Image (cartoon, rainbow, N blue to C red; front, side, top):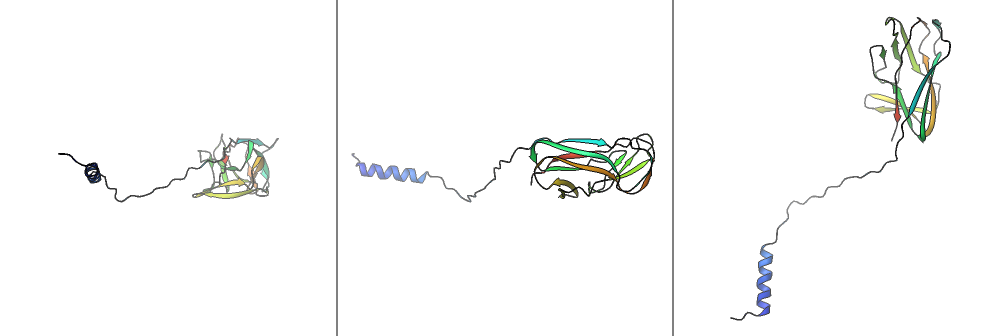
Length: 168
């Protein structure tokens, strides 16, 4: 029996059509691939004021300078470090910090970041904050000051500061 080419073609088409798979409930998903500018480490240096003496210290007395630097301009962020046995930052990490003396923990010093320094703004990070420079900078300075007039006893008071880069 001789089959025509047309008949063979129709049989092949019918056979292949019956084996085609069906696709149901197709969804499309997207994902963002983001390239950000690189960030560079921030170096932080705390330099105590020379020749500090114990006794009566007025409010807002500068007791240390903080210098932040970076190899490239970026938005520098800083705040008090985490709580330790002798260091208790404000809950928001940028308010008043209480430092206990290393030799005698009954000695206490309440300190602030210098609010008169312009160029930085608080940015929320959950329930805490970071102070961030308003623009990209390669260096920035602030001071640590006393909060209120108080009698400071002779001791060593250790302060902790976190620093990094703010990427909006």
